[in-house]
Length: 81
Image (tube, rainbow, N blue to C red; front, side):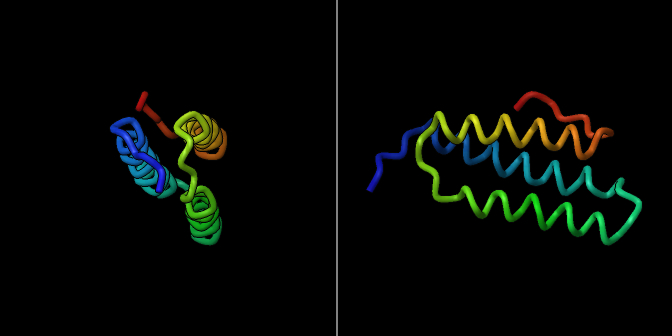
């Protein structure tokens, strides 16, 4: 079993915050089908990466996700996490 430190749990909270932000920001997508597809896509990305334990890789994935949210949801005001 990997040794999870404080940094890992902080990153876990950042991922949860990022997911909630994406859900809230997606409400501005006018097409309901596109909105649900966007939410499903973001959720699948989180599910796909939920087994990562390397802190550096998790930080990189969070950075990439934030960038993608800004591209997909340009009205999103994503603050520094």
